[in-house]
Image (cartoon, rainbow, N blue to C red):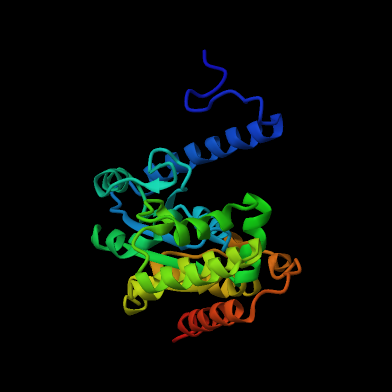
Amino acid sequence: MHLVPKHISLPTTRESLDEFRQRTQRFSERRLKLFRQFFLFPNATASPLFILGVQRSGTNSLFDMLDESLSVLTYNEHNPVAFDNYRIRDAAARQQLINRAHCEWVAFKPICDVQHAAELLDSHAGGKAIWIFRHYTDVANSAINKWGRGQYHHIERLAMVDNCTHWFCENVDPDTRALINHFFLAGISDHEAGILKWYVRNQWFFTLKLFERRDHVLLIQYEDLVRDSASIGQKVFDFLNVRFDPRYVDHFHEYSIRKSDFPAIKPEIQELCDDLLQKLIREAHKA
């Protein structure tokens, strides 16, 4: 008799017992959810849903909200069934997961692939996407706390590496690359690098003209989601045409908004990010 499910490895030296318990609990909860979906929606035809945005923008919180619903099955970016080293697997692999699901939506979180958002939508009939954005200072603070100088290295790579093949550099247009190169050569701080990463990644929403796909792409602001959880949660589930329960948003709290100070940054960089932020806000609030 197996004491540990075969899909769950024993705790590693880096993992505490509490973390191991949480991991096994998540595994058990997912198995139970799959069991319930199988009996509630035996003949359901699922469609793909892509959760997009910049790392540390609230994509996990949005994903957790969606995962509360039996109408949605989620595949996070660290799930090897749907992702390989945080890159989403090809259309055939995705479609296989969609075909075997017993629910209405199969949600993927391809944060490292937002530059391919249009292709992801075009590769599946009936697919939709939700793009979530957050104030650039909170995103940069959170990213630096989690990854240290990783944001700086992203900007350095884009500015300095010819023929860069890293996901951050993929398909970036020459004008954006030249702009980042200009700031980088003038010297930037880690925090300035963090918000420039925010700028580069959120620009894709407009570069790919996702705003023209309003029937298939929903843009929401993280601050709206945590301040008015029930209303925005209802908006998200209406977009998916599935039932919303206010309990799905119990985990949202406003303390995550502007909770840390942000150092002074170059006015030129701040203006650049402010302009994009206001553009995103206007687009998100369109009727």
